[in-house]
Length: 382
Image (tube, rainbow, N blue to C red; front, side, top):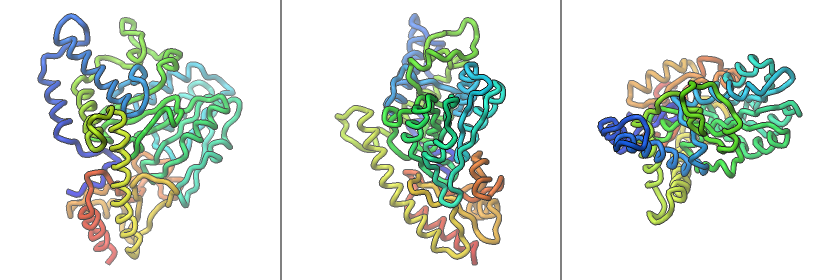
């Protein structure tokens, strides 16, 4: 199978699965400091926080684990909305995945706050800082923005959007789910107050991560059980953490660090070097894919962002997205169809819920994979 479904979830290295299995099968208990099993659990959690901190260039004390990015965002939206009221405003963008839209819309409505919508260029797929800035006011409390569109691959100037949000006195919540798999990320460079991502998009297990400065997290009071810990970041983690999943996440980060860079360098430095190499490799493969699709009569490419992840959204004349998906799958090519939960973006560019076919390049894709996809699409246009 040629996997172009990385934007929905990457393939997983053997070492990640082994880390999960080893942890499940080890003598492990609830976290503590008395027994070896308790200390093992503590070590797994601390190790995962440190690994994610190296990946995102943030502090481990500000790394929160959740069942998914969607859950983490809903939980944070509800917690932050306790400080909002009528007259306050929240800005969301039509480029975003719904997981960075609906939690804020729902929380704002519950608090009596106003939701303001930033559009984007429906032809190119670009979201500019001016698009967002036009919706800001002294009443803006939070701006939710994507670092990369999972539908079109568009990469807004997120740092500039964050700067504009801060200039208005607002917090900035960045959805980094799609970007983290394709580029070196630095929360310090982005300036984001919150950064959310999902390890299963970068070779890891299924769960979510939310990172923020510990000092900021200290100001937020989520709903929680009475006997559960109140320290940061634990106050945001509901119930016992999935230790095996966190061990797999550490293994995934170590796998990324091992793709490039000097073994003598820090893990953070190796990650940054690895992701630069990943970005260059994916760009080479993606250029072949884009050029090939553009050369096929009857294929329409949606969006042409100035800066993008290696993600192509396309339609084939006379064929439904589902038919293209199924016909390619029958040939061993996985390029799924839909709107991929980016329903507002799909509507904004005129596609609606059926969406289109999405082909995303990952580090494990090859030129042979691309040629198989292009051959399959070409057959559908004859």
